[in-house]
Image (tube, rainbow, N blue to C red; front, side):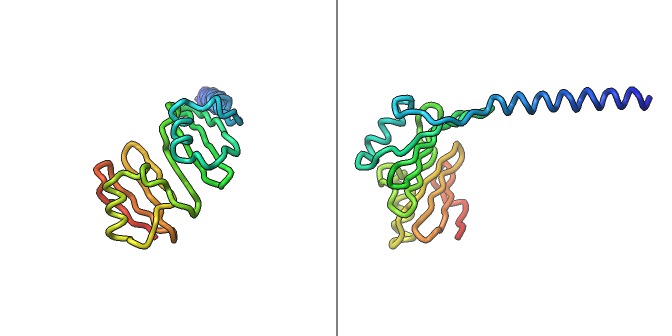
Length: 151
């Protein structure tokens, strides 16, 4: 019985190692040119960051997703999904373009934090998170209701 158990454990360990190695082989991070970005990502950059230049772009593929990480010469970082839709805009300490911020969130920030501007915005299927100058983070649900405040 011990021999069978040891053999089964060895088989499971070998299979797990092979599976982990195959996942690692699927992951890929590599620099790409601007021309390789999805059209929607290029349009976004041209519309909202026309006065900035692209420093570099990293194509980031893992097991379940593809992302494009763009760094502009100003230090602004942009992240796009496989379709070129923006996921994150981090302007460091400058201001996120108003047209990117949903109107309900912009109004909430203006009313409740009138002396602070949005320097970063992230969106997911279930939330949008904004960071204000000074580091205050506000998380909104998909209906633009505040669900978390983190300073």
